Length: 243
Image (cartoon, rainbow, N blue to C red; front, side):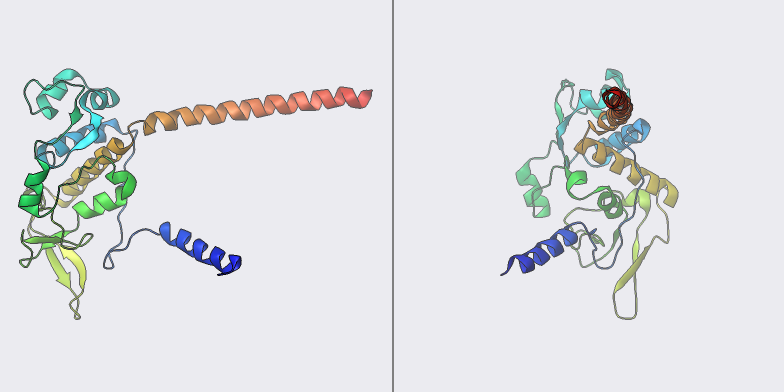
């Protein structure tokens, strides 16, 4: 293969790698989360512990780091997050489920979610949580539009209500409806899943908010120094030209 053709192939592969994932015609939804929204991250952490930590871990995040970044104290950790009595605050957020239990119960090892937001993206997580629908053919009674035949049960069904699939004349899934809401309204459920997404996004890169804040000051410093160096340059050349 010539270098020119090889360049075309590599360029095409690079372009494809930046295209957002499309699963059976469903577009990803933007939850509009922010690493600077400490309240959403805090609420998302509480949701995660209540509904997700029975199976999933975020092994690269420590309890005390989470409390520090969200402006909370040790009492909050003890009351809302730490379920194991006597667990030290500097420990990572690990699930009590053993890997072999996940294989026995769900047919696959339950994944750690520390880097899911980096690998999949915030849009994927949020859309996945809102893409379950009733399917009696599945072992757990639900399927997911984003990840077909998912092994993860719809643990939030009592909050959302039972989502029903809508098919077109060709039997293709085109929409999901919730005829009867659960404990939450549609807006409340979407806000809760957005908060869960915010927490998982934060867990994937806890330093991001600090990095972005620091970046603003670095750019301002560079702008000021560029102006100073430009004025020095003008002054030096003015004196040289006079000679």
